[in-house]
Amino acid sequence: MKLTRPRRDILNLYEKIDHPLNAEEIYNLLNNEYDLSTIYRNLNFFEKENILKSIVFSDKITYYYKPKGHYHFIYCIKCKKFERLNLCFEKQFKEYIEKNIDFKITDHILYFEGICSECQKEGDKNA
Ligand SMILES: [Zn+2]
Ligand SMILES: [Zn+2]
Image (cartoon, rainbow, N blue to C red; front, side, top):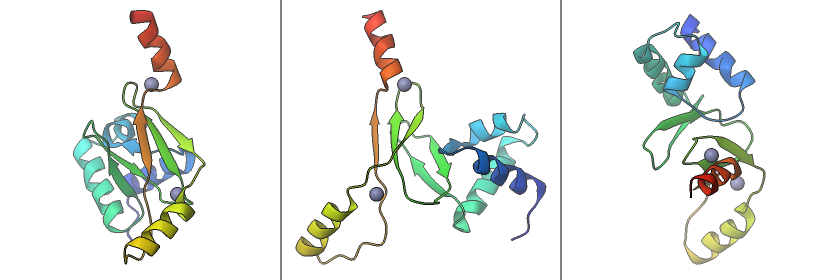
């Protein structure tokens, strides 16, 4: 892989930030140094190379994350913040799926959408 400057800068961000990012956030975090189409092009490249994975939530924004280790997301649909969830149900799911469906599991993605505690407080105030 040719490590061009935008590629290196994007990967550096993921060394520091532990949660998924969308193209616009990357654009801002890199102080608008590259245009959005450059960011998109490189994110696509990283995904093809299996360096980043992408995930789309119900708001249709694509987020990219580094598939290091194994983790789950809690995603707030109001403020669009992520939290890490260090809890995995893989064993139970695996046993069920492999017993009941002839299917070999290689990976799984699990996330929950909802409203975080901060946004719940906001909602209470407005009500
Ligand atoms: Zn929130
Ligand atoms: Zn898991």
